[in-house]
Image (cartoon, rainbow, N blue to C red):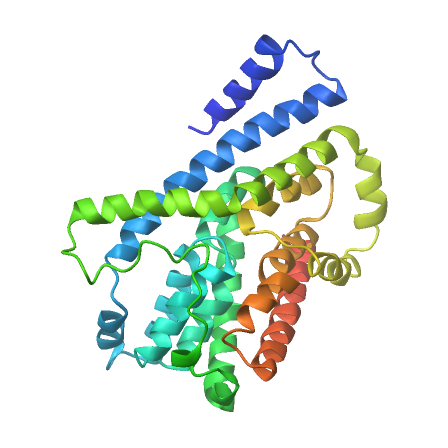
Length: 324
């Protein structure tokens, strides 16, 4: 199925533009066309599917459903919901606030928040490069880390570090449109229309980051020698992990925006764990995302959240570098 994007890139690169095979520019251009079409098509399709799902989800029903269920089951649902939410921290914050207001325990909601920057949408695309089994293992390990953080929040009484959400900023964010369905009768046509609206709104917000990510990835793919990455990123599998975290924090992108760069680094020989750590640091620890989260989390929780995720990402990176 995904081969169609390679065929399309071949057609544009070698038939329409008649570039010479094997040249640096042709390799970069082919990578750009293939990843642009693949990522935007898959992203739009999955946003639409997840939009339909979200329109069928009621936070009050979630609370009632969890009532009386074992705690491990609630954490499992939080992980699954974190996996299927789209692309950016600000898309997770409205759901996070809603769950707390609905009375869902804070540890469960923090598990959702910890897992949501690493969505299954990105993993589905990433699987085409690193393999779907490895991709699924990565997703499960990240989910387990999110559960550990949620349990810590519950056991250590960190509720005091969370803002009272009824006073939180209600400013519209990139993924919080078309969700007020209480004023109209909800039909499948409403859900479809709103899901289409999600596709338009989210792509409108993230297209530039995805485009820039693909552009950088294309340049790295065609023009940066493989020896550069082997020399600076594969010399030491241990110290390359904290180095990847340091590089990722100042950057900003969503998971789909960083995947083209990540694909290129992996194909150039950078160890998988180092590449995964770099991606997770950008999507979950970047300074812009911490600024967004500071609207609803106090400094104490931000420090704990960042510290836990940093340690988790480093451990995950080392595991994948040495065991996979």
